[in-house]
Image (cartoon, rainbow, N blue to C red; front, side):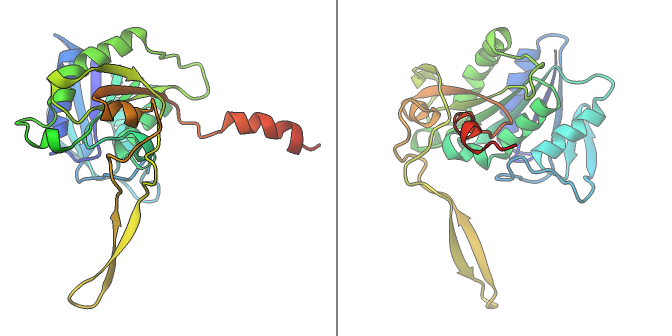
Length: 263
């Protein structure tokens, strides 16, 4: 198996080291792991692509490349780098911090997996929830490293990887903020929402008088939608959410068709 890995924390991020270990185990003997990751941190860029300027890409070693762009750019770059032998699977992560709940909409990690799905490739985003219990661990990515390979194999065997639909599915995996031994299991769960949590702006004035704005996130432990991905993570379960690059609200679409269709 040939696996492409990318992330949004950057080419030197420790989570990418963990993902390379996971991918190597999944690829198996004789498999290949290719890395195309951002040269610099790209957290919060979502599914951004560098549409109006070129992306510089540098080869750092065998099957290892850094691109001056977003995770989606990196997947696009890999389509050129690996054009003779495309990947069988794309893994994005392991993100330092969760990408469950409302974080999904901002996540470059999820954006990388989404771009892979748009390219017709099987893709999984992986993120490690951080908290007080992971802060004291020698390896804060322990949960993802231990449980990741098994879950990816199960997804490869049992997941919906059909590509004949308009939008191919991809999967979002979030590992809870605990050590690997404390994980209670896995929950297939929808994307949730933390109650009352929104990104906010905090003004800052530099010594030279210039005004800056810091984007500040909200509490990651706030109560969330019951039985959602956030809720599962906070109860020490790994969450698995099938996703697709389609923001249509199909329920409202059906309701409006009979009311507002004209002509």
